Amino acid sequence: VQVEPGEARACDVLLFRWRAHLPAKHCAILSAPDRITHAHDGAAVAEVAFTPWWRRHLSHAFSFPGVID
Image (cartoon, rainbow, N blue to C red; front, side, top):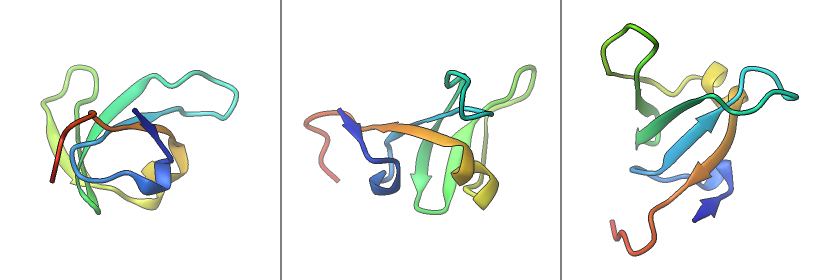
């Protein structure tokens, strides 16, 4: 289920685009309000800070129906 990016909660899937006119090509899982888990090409999966840079590039957020916190 698509949710507003600003309403995303832990365990939601986030999609990012590098420029407004380009399609989203990167995803992450919101692991805490200020942390995301993702991997770059050729790099290990890592949990990193959900910094303003990431927030500016966030384009979509999705939650899994029926998942309860």
